[in-house]
Amino acid sequence: MQKRQKVRKAIIIGSFLFFPITIFYFSPNLVLIGAMDGIVVGSFVAFSAQFALSLFLGRAPCSYFCPIAGLHECLAPVTDKKAKGGWRNLIKYCIWVPWVAAIAIMFVSAGGFREFDFFFHTANGVSLSKPFSYVIYYGVILLVVAMALIAGRSAFCHSMCWMAPFMVVGTKLSGWLRLPRLRLEPNKDGCTKCKICTKKCPMGLDVMQMVEQGNMGNAECTLCGECIDSCPQKAIRYKMGIGK
Image (cartoon, rainbow, N blue to C red):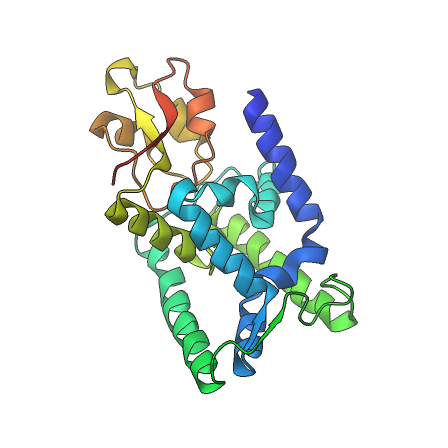
């Protein structure tokens, strides 16, 4: 395993181990609760940061910092089934659009942003401070594990993640604004069609086909770099540049 992948996996597994502390900073519910009183909470800041970072890093935060990615990495020895995409990828947008609309409506109804409380509903910054908090935590873990075992690894990321759309929208906006952004660049002449890149992709994408087409742009790609580090011909590389 390349050193980069060892470091990346160590970071996301560490992020998962800290998830009992940080889970409320990714909470879609606390954003709504805070918005009703015009309070900007920690998860609002986290989602805004994900959007801002995606303008220049695409969906790389998914692969390098997300605790759920760390859980999926822990599940890799248990299931190597690849999750299917297609219409299933649209489910998260059916969740995200009305949720974001509700947040906006609640802030307007509350008279706008009136207060900032990053540690909203946490005890000294720790999320799991009450018995009921553990019900939420283990409910999320059970959902992710069940989806991985039934539908394939990263199924939650494809279908249910409420954070991914922030980065997908940010990536699209970056392309429209022609901002320099981290991306994958293929060398299709160097590809020997060994399909190792496709086998290694944790999101179950047909990476070899993307290389052959000369276009690595895919909304579900999290820029983890597995394809880069596994390709024996070095036919894929990271590039910071302007493009779609």
